[in-house]
Image (cartoon, rainbow, N blue to C red; front, side, top):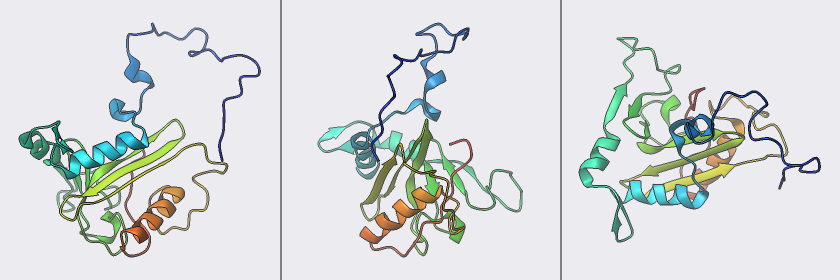
Length: 192
């Protein structure tokens, strides 16, 4: 459902009265984690960059060495070492840039029954739920964004996925387009 800001009482102040902030000093304070603000077209370009090993069309944006580094695991979950960040066993690898969904356990899959490794990231900020995920070997990719829903996006949790329920439903439909089995089972951290 389309929504617009209510400006009937004028434009709201960007900062509350008494806020300790000088414009231009720290814009990241108001940005999503990592500072990335992308449109769906921008997420599509990011997917093409990840699928193209640093190229988008005929333009090389990142060197192959940079892409290798971007995909390099920076942290790997180790249940025996109890290295903390396993999110109940659903998160197994952080790369130096994106997340990697390994497909090795039911809880660490983008789609149930899909054991492929996906590279990408979920996004959440200021009412936005989004994601960009690619499977470089097959060339498959999914991009989605939800903003301003007419209902509580956290409602309707059926317990099948650790994702926000509306994300699970969107990924279920995208998975059908890719011909992968049923619902998503990936997880997001509380801070993403």
